[in-house]
Image 1 (cartoon, rainbow, N blue to C red):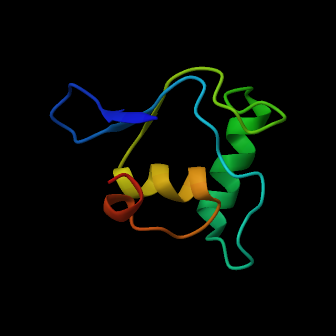
Image 2: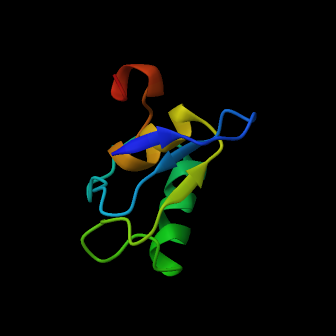
Image 3: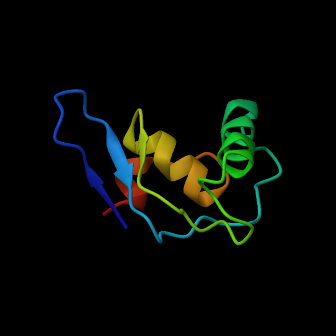
Length: 79
């Protein structure tokens, strides 16, 4: 579950209760792996990889990569 934010920046919001994949692709980009780790450490993603609060991503593709656990085209994932 996600939506575009109301700002002009094309931010993309993944909503509370949305689930991310626990598994990561073998070739996950380092910055996506690090962001997923940061979201876990701060409690935004719980132990089951469920979003505990709305989270604003910089782009639709960044959101897709974090939720899917690897490189993804956000426009294809969020159809």
